[in-house]
Length: 146
Image (cartoon, rainbow, N blue to C red; front, top):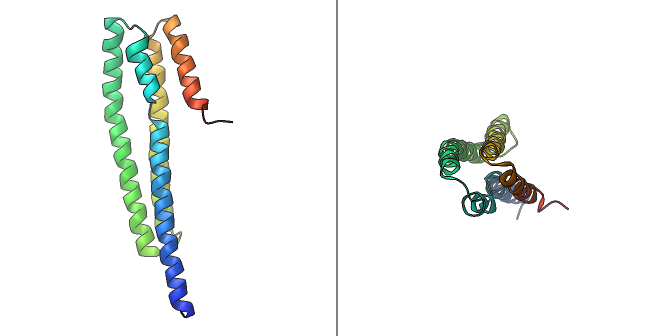
């Protein structure tokens, strides 16, 4: 192999690895920003919610689901932009940076919306229910921290 084909092979492999890393990172972050299943289980199965609490939480969850889906769609669109920019430019260009920034804005907004959603659900609970809820939230947020 001469220098040019080696360079081209290295560039192609770098683009593939960069795209795979961005995709895997995006999947990980989306999973981490969504309310964990244990919290959902806790709220709907273990807190003994009243009918009114169930109604209010269902309403909050419906509203949040729409917003979450929109932000996840924005993240997918940003990843598509990133893939196109990397394929076209083969460098960390302004187009690549724009796509990364677009993704980060959507991801950050999803994280904020998730936190606001969790806090809105908490306001529906009694003090005793909220204490159990808080313990579950803290555990979910710190279980990977060492």
